[in-house]
Image 1 (spheres, one colour):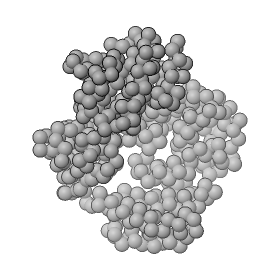
Image 2: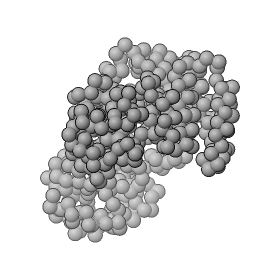
Image 3: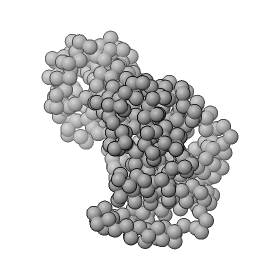
Image 4: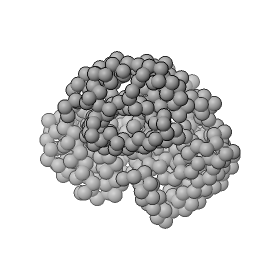
Length: 456
């Protein structure tokens, strides 16, 4: 599905009985894309852009979106992100500041990217959450050894009181739940998984808070890999239940007395563990995907249907023989080149940026590979805009003959390929299918994998 139609369909979903949120902003980054990004759920962590705009020549922007409930979103400026919490019907004014280095050098520079709330009418929602996080993080840093090594549980009362002093007497429900489960996650980490019975007071027979990040963080902490580490479960029976399908699998998960009386939570625990088992070599990926498809059809819980569909998409993303993200970019002659133009051959795709000696070295090492595998593969180097002219000079000076393309402002392509560092390599099969994502560097066995995939 294209990004446009995905955004439209998701926007329609958000508009159902929602209330508009209006965001005004100012920044030091003119003419950059601004987005609101949500996690569709906290198990698959599949992201969606729900609305977008661009900053004007002065760095100002506006966004509007209808939402049905308090929602945690990431406000993105270019590829820099900051997390905020927005409430239906509220108006926010933000000031965003990108570091100068981030603006000019690296899309993934980790220098501070700051957000200041200049104005809001959310009844203190964002401020309360910020206060909880500020006090919590400072407390953990100050007492790290006492909490994690000496197990000073008595200190948790001090943390609880410090946060309560900062919050209003009757905070809104979302803030209260956020605070409860954030502190519970710390206690759970200190006690370890052996304390699973303790969570009965906070999780069992309680509403499942799918949209509360701290509640879902606690569930992920407690139940990740639960089916292969907990004493109630045998691995051979787990494999058999996955093979036998949805009903058998849920029956298997529910043999634990902790979960037996909570079918909804039991099913959610099953989804968490199917996510973790997908990359466990002892289990068949095809069977995990098949079982997730059954969840999508047979579950009585709409949220679980959505989570299973999201898991199928996120687990399969950039897997071998899936569609590689498409692109159309300009070469040094300003002519467009698209991935589909190379569909008749396999492709070695390289992403590079400016001010990156390792990138330059990897380009030079690509020459030998291009000479050896040029009949089997098309080689493509994509440079970020700031470094493009330098790479044009490098290619001309060293008679490098493969395709060089300019990323320009198509920076979302980096997200599409999940490029986190530079240089990054990918091997694509014919018809634009993924062969290996990511692939190793030229000096780290890239040649081996080119040979391995040559006849695929």
